Image 1: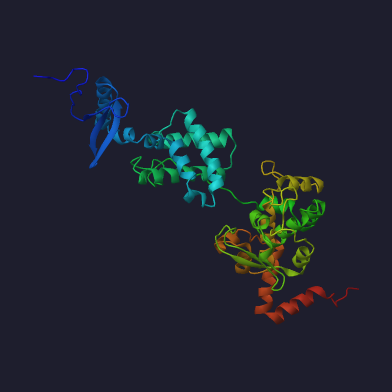
Image 2: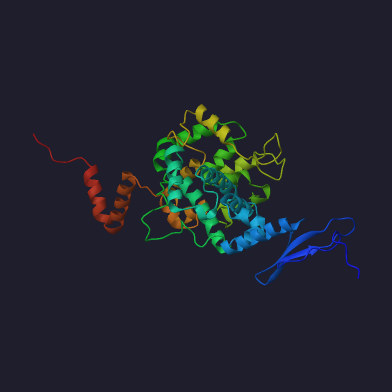
Length: 395
């Protein structure tokens, strides 16, 4: 009786291991065969039985420890880290459509570096105490503003909520909780009232515009008169300027409130726009690139220095956005609060209310007008007595 030569005999198969015969000059090899969540999964296990057994042992250990899905899908293991998962999210097309995308990239950079230095790579290693340490570092060492830190922790909170949805972690460790004694949201002071009222009187604004470079002057006038936001002006197209109806249309895609609005031009702004050349679809373009300006901060600083206006948030000076605050203060004095809110593009009239700061003279005038309406004769007589000299004489 003939028997197969032992050198050509197929190895005896074991449970969960399957031998693939040599074919087309390629050597034979083992594959592992396991069932996971109702699916039959085959993976290369090794060229020899020893290698195959070792691979199968790793799979069994991972299954016992609850890590089998990570071993079968190496990318998922990477996504369990904060850096891998957050990067995967902010690079997605859905996230790039967010208005805060660029800001979120900066937040990601700060958070990633901090977690690395603290040895917390995995999403599951992020704790409230670790985040509290991040907040303290950003405030005390980096001198970041409370609003900046809150934007960064808000980004982190969003990432962790998504990780919960994707079943990478069981719960968000920094979710809002009234029962928690640790408060991970800083109190913000966004008021620029003192700075604006101190450095941006109407005469100073006129001096600032006059001192600016010619390309910057019309932009500053628009900022100061309309209170438009920086990008609303820099991304403005000629199709949004209608000299016939005398309006500027701020489209939805550039408006922060995600709502389009119309702003009346008025004689002064009409003259500003009529003096500009239409060499591009955009109203303001950088001559060097032919594209809209990305930033005009350096030119604005030069204008401030020429006009002797203090500049820089950290030094108590003004920034470009303060021209919007200046316009808001002027508008609430000249018109009703609802009209001012519509021009400024505020989502809620409560946001406009913070610009209502009546002076003592404003309050005195208001009381006089109320008195005149209620007691017109008495008030008139009282004013007359105060104004006319006495007819009594003393000899």
